[in-house]
Image 1 (cartoon, rainbow, N blue to C red):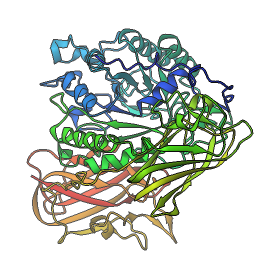
Image 2 (tube, rainbow, N blue to C red):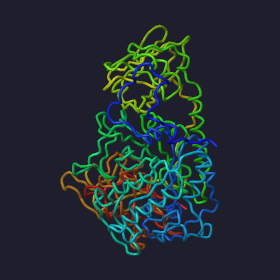
Image 3 (cartoon, rainbow, N blue to C red):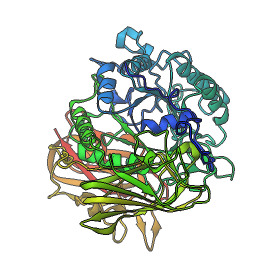
Length: 639
């Protein structure tokens, strides 16, 4: 079995073998050994799996019956083995999500897997994943939600002790952990021990995060800790799978009070070249619209081409790529997800099978001396590197080939144990004897940057480091050709979604320019809004009524939040009613939409079996941010 070598393979003292001159001094913040090992992973997976898988929710309320968790054909080797075969170097399990249901037989709460029929209550899902990760040679990480919508003590000091004890159990009983993941969602409505209530906390102080991190440091000293702002890894700021470029590994987390930030606050996506700490970003996204498995999303799995683009937009921009692959109710990765993952692996293998910089003759106009020659940037060894003299703040490296080579991607790496030094670079290519600028906007490099350019056939490449904060160093220059023909099967709509051609809509209020008709026009860019230029924001409750034109057998109603990147006035609490004649209405069905700000995907409201109606009335009861109501689109799914 291959060892992942997460924490034994990286030693800061390693430089080029027996350098004849002194190496450069580290500049600015530098990563810990655990962070360097984490950087080397580059791509790993999330597995969102809990009662939500069986209730068809994204965020459980905390009142779920523990016995609902019962995967019928669970196979940890199918899940973890598939991920490992497809190039993922680690897996992070949602050991406890916001609903408070624990996937291990914890001593801290009865709301756990021992109350499920799976393995007659004697199962341990965390153990299954941890052991499978070990068998397949990948890292194992744990997600432990700070918010607990089930625990009666949430909001009191007692819960904080319970949370830390849950952390101790996970970090003590399941072997080596490579990452501890703290979600930023905190406080709000919940079941809280049998009483529907709302609990508010001060996320800056309530969890006493430094004490929690002390637990991690003591029990898993080689693990990195993720939260919105670190302390080891920070959130990229969105759940779309895209990092901005440049993205700096250095960062200065500052909270709303001017002090050190707590999880859930600072949302700086780009980091800062002058950051005071080494806190690199992690880019997370799901392979499906939702984070948990939903049957109606089986035909909406990302294509291999889409996943390859996400790889370039995360790993390629200097962050890690955390792709969520949720098991289904069988306890397996769904067949469609396997196809997409396999396609991504095949594309990456095709691209990285041939380094087109190999065998090049390389020179530099600024050289430190023996042990740090330009050839060190081509030797496929992250520990060796080319370095310029101490006084240099710019340099040019020239690669020449015996023949023209076709490529479209360049990868650069800095030896990050010396800090992040390069601030600006450009790349030129020589085609048919003529030089031209190929990449003009190179900026952050850090552990890796993988930039696309137009396909060229060149016999020489010039990397111009235009600006560096300390003498520049590079441990890798490589060239690759992005593969053609990567499958790009488009997302499919539900074939049961009904046409809206004859629908009519009315609302309790509509603003000029944002009419009710926008909610049924099929255009995802338009919105119905109750924010009027003259009358101002019209607060919830606000209702929208739709006449479907004829009685219809209904399975679900879909609601799409606004898609313009703004979270203002998205509906997160709703009431839905239906009627055959528009006069007599059903008993109201109320619920919530979760995680809209980070992941504003289509929401689905399932209707009772046998529902038949011509009229629907959707009422917004609460919104996130601002005080008006917006909806991009409402649809229905027939039976």
